[in-house]
Length: 267
Image 1 (tube, rainbow, N blue to C red):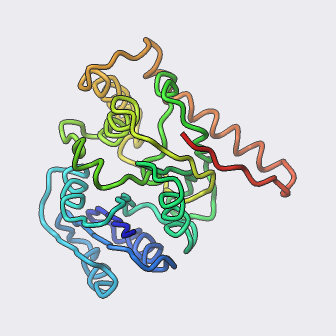
Image 2 (tube, rainbow, N blue to C red; image 1 turned 90 degrees about the horizontal axis):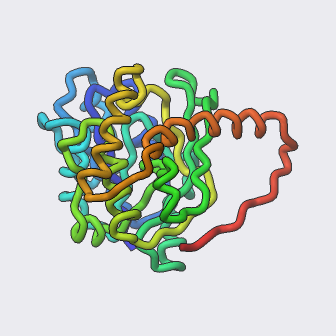
Image 3 (spheres, helix red, strand yellow; image 1 turned 30 degrees about the vertical axis):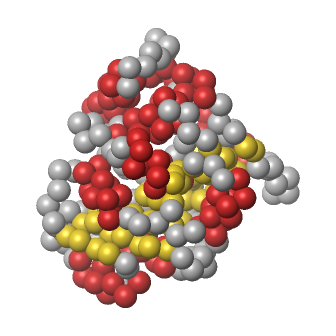
């Protein structure tokens, strides 16, 4: 089972090295790594070229934003499974892809998702909040739920059948894609209750209050674009879920370190 991992970047010299190294350090042998650069001018290309022997395909050219770049990567991909790892993100250890591939092989589902941890932009040892995805139930989307996109792995056949990222959306195309795949078309999914990815804070959708308002509006549009009717409070509940993530992190800091391992769940 080949896994295609796509990293998109633009002027990411301070973070791209961590993303690349977290991919090339994976123990899983059948990985196709694709890097799509938007025409960086800050030294990002030097880092990509320095690791080019470990990269299956890479391109550097102007694009129409992050999601356009992701679509380019999806079209280049030839793997059975597609993963998106942003240039600000990195896998937490070398067995992540092996774990994910094993669950695909064992369950034969359309998608697998896990947990994500937000860390400091300049200090990745500083944990900001934990995104514990939890078991998927379709109606959870109505209460603001979504899996973390960098920890969401999908069969390439699903992209071919249901389409790629909608570039009309500037900050919520990942949400729209997961809403379309999971909620509208009801693809099967498996929750892997493990921390898979760390993400630096300061993403495009939460850099400022203006960006958060824009993202909230686009979340509403995602439902409308798919002919779906959310509850009146759905868009409000989505950002409120972040408060719970801070609370979970606070609890973990004061709890005993001997935490029972969570069981896997299938849907």
